Each structure stands twice: as C-alpha cells, then as structure tokens.
Amino acid sequence: MASVSAPAYPAGMAAEGYARTDDEIRQVLDLARAGLHRYGYGKQLHPEDLARPWAQAGTWKDNAWLSGVRDLLEWVLGERTDGPLSGHEPGHRATLDDLDEDLADIDDAMDQGKYTPPDPGWPPPQAVEAMNHTLAWLQGEYPIPPVCPEGEGAYGCSHKGYFGGEGVPAAIPR
Ligand SMILES: [Zn+2]
Image 1 (cartoon, rainbow, N blue to C red):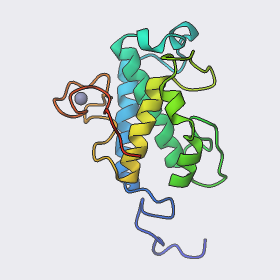
Image 2: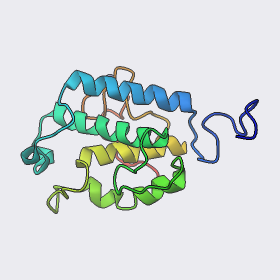
Image 3: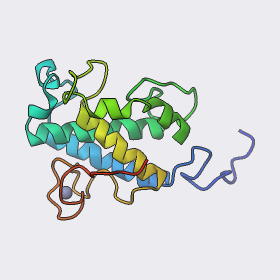
Image 4: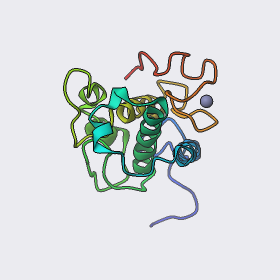
C-alpha cells in the first residue's frame, strides 16, 4: 500500500461506485442480520418450502428477503468473494458493474415459482426481490434502505409507508 494517510476516495464512494458509504451499508447489513436472528430459521431452508416459495408464511418470505439483503451486502463489503445470484467472482471488491453482471438474470430469478419452477441453484425469489431493491438503493436510484429500522423487510414491516404500504416496492428503477 503506497499511502496510508488519506484514502484516495471518500468512504463508500470509491471506484466501486456506490451511492452509500460503507458505514451506511454496514448499518443496513447489521439490521438484516438482527432480523434474521429474530426469525430463527437458520441457514438451511427446507427444499420442500423452497419449491413453493409463494405459499409460505410471511415470516418465511421476510426471512428470505433479509437473507438476500445480507448476501448482497456481504459481497459489497468484501466479506464474501462470490456474487449471491450467479456466483460471479471478480477477484476484487465488487463494483456496481460486478453487481450488474452477477444479477443479470434478476428478472427471471424474481419470478421463480410463478410461471416456472424455482431454480435450485438460485436463492428464493423474495431474496432476489430484496437484491433488486438493495441494488437500486446502492445506485442511489431508490431512497429507502431495504431493511426498516427494526430489522424487517418488505414482507414483515408494518411501519406505515416504509415499503410503500404494499409490501414489495412495485417499480424500482434500475
Ligand atoms: Zn418495520
């Protein structure tokens, strides 16, 4: 490392291109982890539940949402090397371009279980919806973080207006 006195870029605004600082990103990651801990589903979801992701309880769907936030933000912060949807490994901290590459099939992955069976290689569709929301937040195109201040996602939050009042944001700009 050539210089340790001053970072080349403000935190979070480095070459990765995120509109949020690392501190902001970490706060949301911590909220997602707290929510996952509260739900208590653990790491493994039952295959028979994953095969019918839209028939599950609200807590299951919210758990899936929060896991999507966690997995994407861990990659963004460099805590994991592979992207959460396609397994893209850039060999450096993921940039917004890397997120676009990893999430190239995001529309199909969000629709799993609606018109086609879920893909066992993909996270649950609600997790992918959360990645879509999280991406738009990281890009600065959507102002609301993907986890509410009490660690709830779009399927579990009852804060009026936080997620637009209808659960999943209907149209997130990409
Ligand atoms: Zn809430």
